[in-house]
Image 1: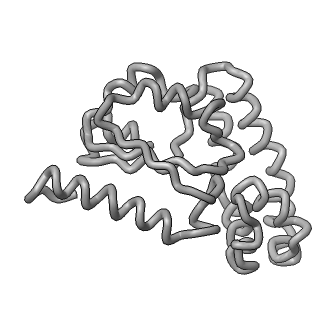
Image 2 (image 1 turned 120 degrees about the vertical axis):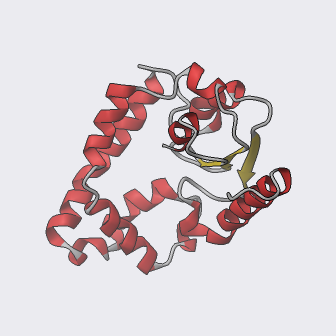
Length: 186
């Protein structure tokens, strides 16, 4: 979404936090990611039907949270339950997977077209969007002005493990943009 807003001139800067779409169309990785998300759907559906009897149980949380973080012990029980609640009540969970298959990943033209000050924020231990399988194409084709930032020690949803590291990366991005574009609203 961020890349599309930037393409339409609706963003003065872009902090792309672990964006999807770096894989190739109809690739093994595209289908692998879709299957992983679809395979988790029954757990989300169970949490939707049974509420906190499922959302607060570690046995139901573990498969989803394990895919989201590097260090499961860093996730509080409340945060884990809230993550399950959020997934179970997301009305676009399955439609989003179908949209990815229908629309495909970012095109080479979309990637090369980025003109706004951009930070590509990646995570060291992402289980889904690994650098070599899903992000390298994106990294290779982004214009030279895009800054790549890798957050150490965190997985796919680092806000669960270390929200401060994400906030610091966003602050750094915004300060850098403000320094390059004084007097403009971010």
